[in-house]
Image (tube, rainbow, N blue to C red; front, side, top):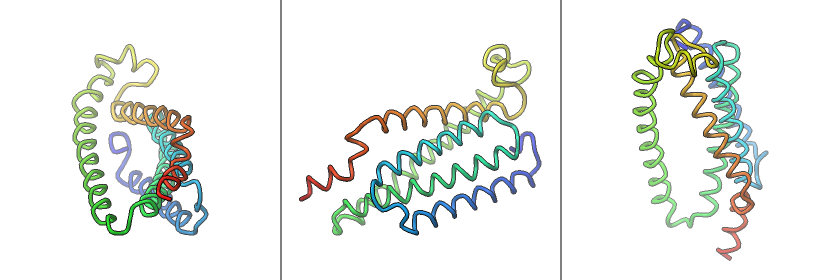
Length: 187
């Protein structure tokens, strides 16, 4: 956003995204989602991936605002479903260890994504998608060239990968029914 728009535009987009995150949290907390947590989680991940892909292909602050709202709404719902599932299925005596491991894993992955993603966007994709960049005649011809298109392409690829992974996960009947399968084994 900052490569093509002002800090005020970024602030507005982020504010709309925060409203989406709060709305998703309120929806999850209001017990709309009580059953089929894995299915809800996978559907939320699918919608979130689509919003990330959408954010990558546009340069419109209005579309970015919509994508931010949808992405953070879906992300909040997905995290709530995941947390509820772990709380239901983890024995009480082990929850501290399991939740510590999950939090540490999430932080590690987040750090790796920020390091690798930042490097890819700034040092590889952004220069390649400049008007005279290495990819300007190939990928740039259909994706666009100029400032911000490198990070946009990274968002597009990340969203596309998320959609593919979500589709694969949704196609697995066992994974969709993981909540009940785990319950049957613990009985």
